[in-house]
Image 1 (cartoon, rainbow, N blue to C red):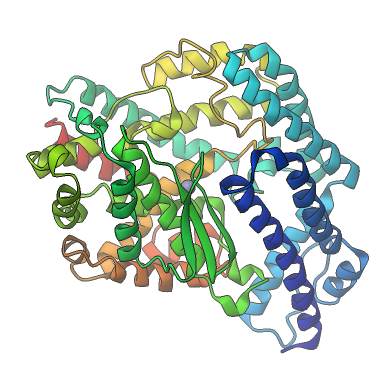
Image 2 (cartoon, protein in one colour):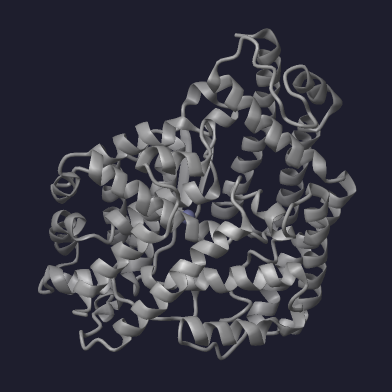
Length: 505
Ligand code: ZN
């Protein structure tokens, strides 16, 4: 390999190892750490992360990178490099420019502010007290505007913030996708509300012993091809996936004896994230070629497994008898069609994380509209609760009675993660387009799933998505796989076909 490139990669490996050390500490914090050591642990994590940041933004690294890349414009000296290596360097330069755009003092100040704000958010939510949180949110919005100016943007500050989560997408594009989704989803929700088909959701809120739920989840994970020699599942308050290397990718789940869908679909969702990380090429570890493309593509993998596979009829043709065998008293006499209706029940509700497939993107849309307007100065933090409630009533058809189940429900803004929400919507859209490419390219995919063969799909995803790392941008990946650009069309058609049948519309 090119000697100059080798120097850059060797340093990247060290930086990545430091970040992964922090990830191990964070995993432990969320799973087994005694609650009394929170303060000590947060100091340990922030020390390791600051070491990684210092190395990545150091003069030494700048000099090694500058030999291969024009640091101002990003042009690569391609002499002797293949396409993969060029793409690797483009990504490194992108990340390096993002990391060095912000002054060290600014980063420190923002980290202190958001760490306090998350703490205050928790209290404010528990006490249903928006006024307690709003001064922090005001400061966060101010600093985020500043951050956008440091990075620079063409149209509006939101563009600069989106870039951290979904490289290459613009606010305009997101707005256009929502412009297509909005009328279609509102129309579909309206028709479903007037349907006479009975709601079967109560089937899922019987008593389901947690140990049996755990066993069933593990069976599905193992069938999906989640490698338990290179991963494990634990319990945590909020489910997540974390990776230390493709040979160690861990997930967590949350179980509730009175809610079968929480643990079941949470496990399949995190399993989808984990397959992505396990499918990255270990030989490129440390470089962008062993990293996920974007949060949106990551979410496409979890939503694909959770919804397009896990909430489909072919999947349950195979798994329902197995689930019934574990819960004969609860489900033994329940026909598959009723169970299928229960796991796909559309119930407009206040809480995003509990939302069904049809209303989910409406929750995202209202957050996108509000955070963008905040950043542009079109609305104030003070007006937020009222605007939130109005938008919920207009889009989802329900009105929160407290700020805890309204504007204070998500941690994202307290973390300073402005621009993150649209990646959930993108995940649903990318996921649908990718799944339809798989349906077109794999013979009888749904037949295979109905026979319990999930590995064929995993192999296809591994070859066509996972192993590429960041070789392509999200838009490029979708175009290459489907022959079409990113669009809301396939997702809308899928929802209409599925729910028209379910609700007899
Ligand atoms: Zn996810």
